[in-house]
Image (cartoon, rainbow, N blue to C red; front, side):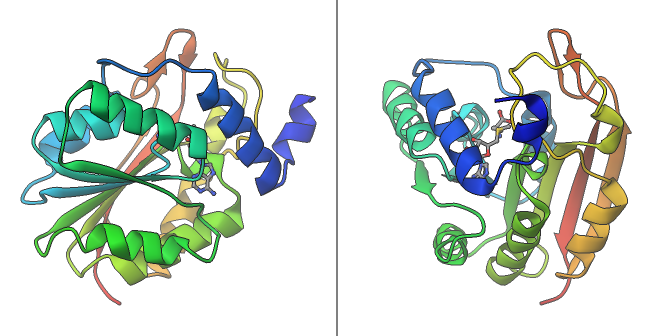
Length: 225
Ligand SMILES: C[S@@+](CC[C@H](N)C(=O)[O-])C[C@H]1O[C@@H](n2cnc3c(N)ncnc32)[C@H](O)[C@@H]1O
C-alpha cells in the first residue's frame, strides 16, 4: 500500500497492519524499555498500578512489572496481546495482565474500568507512541474512557510524534501515522478533565537508529469528572 493511502487508512486497515506486524515478531525474553518508560517509572510517585494502552509487544509493560509495579496493559491487536502473554510467561511475571480491546469500540470503557479496579490506590495511565497511531475520533474516545475510569488525582503520561516529525526519517515501514499538534491534544484532554502537570517536546527523547522522532511528552493529572 502506498504511504499516502496508509495515511488515510480506516481503523480496520490499521488493525490488520498491527496484527500482521506482531504476528511476525519474536516473543521477548528480555528487552530494554523505551526511554519514556524509564522516565515514567521514576516519576510514578505513589502510583503502584500502571495501566498501559497501546502496549504493542509489551516491552514497557513488562519492564514496569519487573520493577514492582502492578500492570494492566491493553492493545487492540490480538496477535500483540498473544505475544505479550507469551513474554510474561517466559519472564515468569505474575502481577501483570493483558486485555485485548480497541479504543473506539463499545468495550473499551469497560476494559479501562476493569483495569482501574485492580487497585484502590493512585494509578498512572500510560500510552507511548499511541496517540499518533490512532485517528482523532479514537483520541477523543481514549480521553473520554480515561476520564470515566481514572480517579481524581490519577495521572496519564503520553508520548507521541508531533507535526514537526512529519518529514523526519523513519525506520519502520510506512503505515498509518497521524502527526499530532500538541496544543490540540492538550485541549482535547482538558475537555475531559485533565490538566497538564508536565510537558516537553523535542528530539532525542525517542531515538531509534536513524529515527530521531520529534515527540511531545505530557503528564496529565485528572482534576475533574
Ligand atoms: C506504534 S505502536 C506502539 C507500541 C508501544 N506502545 C511502543 O511504544 O512500542 C501502536 C500500538 O497501538 C495499537 N493500536 C492502534 N490502534 C488502536 C486502537 N484503536 N485501540 C487499541 N490499540 C490500538 C497497535 O496495535 C500497536 O500495538
